[in-house]
Length: 103
Image (cartoon, rainbow, N blue to C red; front, top):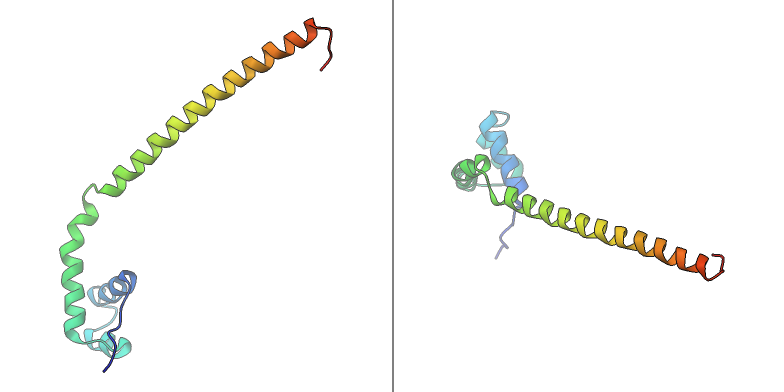
């Protein structure tokens, strides 16, 4: 009994795009990759069905915006910590001079 082959989404889209662009015929693709016509038809239907999602504002954009907001919060927090550290350094430096100690 033969094992089922698994194909990556990249491979499937590459095969279907070659078919749709006219670069290769379905028969050529079937022979080259040892696929059935039904398999390629199924992949083509999946790609066509998912095509509108490629142009819709997706969750990727939202995830990127959330990541940017998180990074901006981190930058703000680090900026505040740096300012506090600078002020503390300045205050402590002044105290050493008053005590007659040199840094």
